Image (cartoon, rainbow, N blue to C red; front, side, top):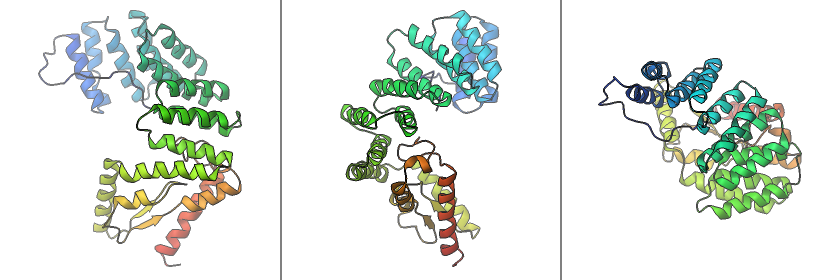
Length: 331
């Protein structure tokens, strides 16, 4: 989950590097360009103005991205010494504590952000979404559901809400009719429901044994994927195909468990010759129907599938191996 703190950034060009604001903007530009090692410009900004709480916050984000959680936490705490009512810093601090698996401190920081927030709905959504992650990693089922429901009420498109909710109910938290009701309500409250919301409902109805509605929502999600496949993913696939063709290597494309192969094939429409496609939809649907989703998945982070259990990984690997033996090696 990406940590959101700043909504906008200033441009690097045309700056006079004599004020802390200019160095802050330079660091901001480096950070947004992925040049984390160069974002030490924040430190220069703080040399000029040690009272810049937002520069400390942004420096903390950079340090966290570099994996230095101790230094990141120290930067966030310094920002809060300067401005103890900067709720965005508390969100960042909570995310850092969660990454270090300090769940008590993470919960306290995120709750503090909610306590001092003065009506900013983005802060409410972001803090509660991080609480979903904290409670999930902590193993707190009831708290995960409560935080997920809160996020869903704020933003019915928030993927973290579906993930946390499904995770808890997969572990036997309660009656699946509850997430069904909340997710159906979320569909009604948004004019363009995302595919993950339909995927989540498909999972819920699968667990409730309603195959008709499970298929209905699965089809709606697949229709969106067919229409709106990520352009950058498509470009990467085409580039990969070109590289492999020059080297005489066959491209093998593997679809996610439970998902239809059609959206993946659509990327190569008209250029499918020589590509091996591995379809994992039917084999996983048949397996889940015979047992349950929990047997094959540890979570449902994508709405309709998640990280596999050992049994799920074995099924996936076995199906890929069978296709390779048949399509590539002719056995």
